[in-house]
Image 1: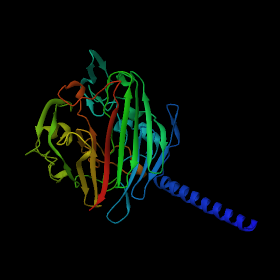
Image 2 (image 1 turned 60 degrees about the vertical axis):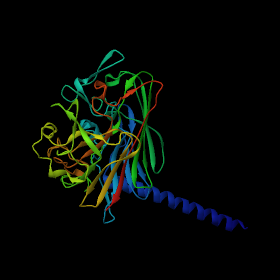
Image 3 (image 1 turned 120 degrees about the horizontal axis):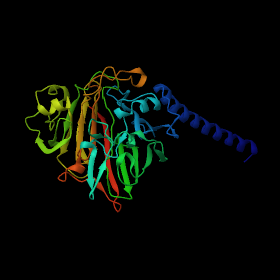
Length: 380
């Protein structure tokens, strides 16, 4: 073969490779530019970045600040991509508004712990109070407010890791945790959680994404249809801490065993709805073990349906009752008004460390914490 032919082949290969590289780079850049994101910064002396995943079905953007979801683009019934996740355009905005937990991994203990205390092995632990007298989502120094490391990543998956030191936010033990986000071939976003500890502790991690399946920034989620496979909810007191009792959902506004429009019963005269100013309750899932579908939500405007699958025994349904028109603007300057998003947080029950009858959240040094959840999207 002549030198000219060899050189021609090499040149063609280099050009083709360059085009592929440029195409890939341009695709990622376009995604970032379209969101006007600013994430290359430093928080608590650690670098913060934005990372993108895509697989031909979904596109996602995530940041290592709080190991959080920033953007999740899902095809709607017209074939156009719709961002269904609320959030902000910069890491600084997330930091300034950390207490709303948009898209973050929350913990060490997702949800509330009453009086911000629990007792383990005869020792009483005092936690950070950030919800009146209670501790919510790990306190002010929860993992949502930390910069995680990236262990590995690919086009469709990323693993964030964080080492929470002994005593952080009042919790015992050094806990090494990781969460892996993966875009699946079934049109889902899978979240795998793993952790170990060097001292007996409690742990309850979850993702706190705020969804609007009509598109982030749409005015309401009250037109969405919700189904939850739960026979009961966990009764709460006037500070949203479990009383230890369950309430059967039959004949109540909490009966979502069959799909029901969220807004149809949210203003019903009901003591539990008054406490939460709407839905803000743990649903006790009917099948308490195994990776299984536990809920679905459908938005008629876009035709997007989201199914929730998990290994967890509980699901917190929050209907955006504390959102306000005056809240800081979100992505692209969009307002996020009252009840313009919902959360479906897979979890162990709230305040479980103080309720022996609830499924245990204790993690011991010889154990590995392992849970799995998925948000899976279809069109109908």
